[in-house]
Image 1 (cartoon, rainbow, N blue to C red):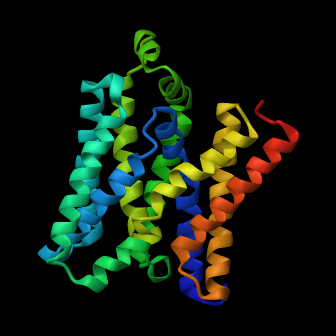
Image 2: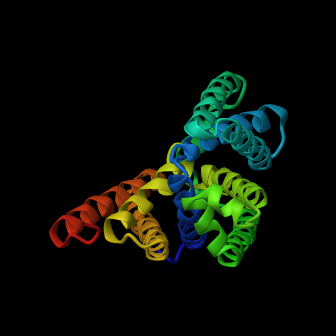
Length: 265
């Protein structure tokens, strides 16, 4: 498998994305915005369609539209603080509608490749772009670890204690948008939201600790990517879907382990 350069590229990018997607996913889940990935992934499809129709780079346009959509979500969330999920529902509905309309004007083959991803057709420029975002994301979550944890559990108290909640939320929102846009191209728009939520759901079955849950989620996500790519190569399955199925299987195993050993009771 490793004799092929496209598989080596897929493993490199897959491991990096597998490590950072659960980081943004954990914050989204704790803020009751677990469907945020769905909203932004559909926004990415809208951006892809615009790029294909306009003759621009679909990935760049998808990143821009995702950033705009994520900032809109954050703005609406602050306006309706008691109904945070409302912001996601509004953006997701609009994105699905716009993506559906724009897809009529885009090349069906190119557009469909973004639905389920094309991790085996990665360009070197996309590897470099992913590497840069990977490094920035790791530095962000390490540098602001305590502030992010505080905001995730109690945003109001964090604000009262002097944490710059607005800045951190905006930075995290932009990072989430960029990561989802990249992942939509590589893993698939219909798959990426699953990697935001399922590995962390598995981690919650194994530990109540914020730090341990984060470590477990990242580990489970990376393992899912490695297993998914391996199975997809030897069984000729679609990579993005196989990765998600692997993560679901691990979730089921985690639930069984929790049931037997009562790890979070």
